Structures are given as C-alpha cells and as structure tokens.
Image 1: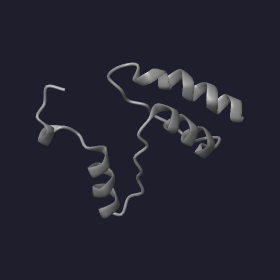
Image 2 (image 1 turned 120 degrees about the vertical axis):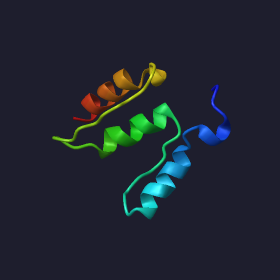
Image 3 (image 1 turned 180 degrees about the vertical axis):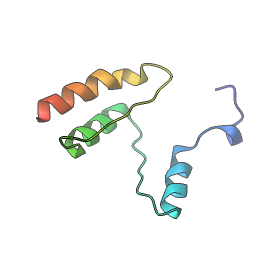
Length: 71
C-alpha cells in the first residue's frame, strides 16, 4: 500500500499482457470466486500453487476443502 499506483501490480494488466503473449490467463477478483473456479476446474494430477504474503482470506484451507468435496 505504500507503493505509488504506477508501481503496483495490476492483475488486470497482467492478464492482458499474458493474453497478448498468447498465454491463457484470467483474473478472478475474490477468494470465494477463486475457490469456486479452481475446485471445479482442477482434475486429478493438477498442481495448484498459491503464493501470498498473508492468509489471503483463508484460501489454502478453503481450496483444499472444496477440492476434496468435489472428489
């Protein structure tokens, strides 16, 4: 929060840049939407990596529970 706006990560811009480079990417703005999307999109053998500098709304536990529920 101490960085000027022009130096902050813009997820929307990152997705646009990846799309321009021919990469599939999407921006999912909330933890609950991320969990819902990944829990239905992941398949056996997929690897999901969550990187955060905090608890990120409890995404780790929520995602594991949702994936297990869908198995």
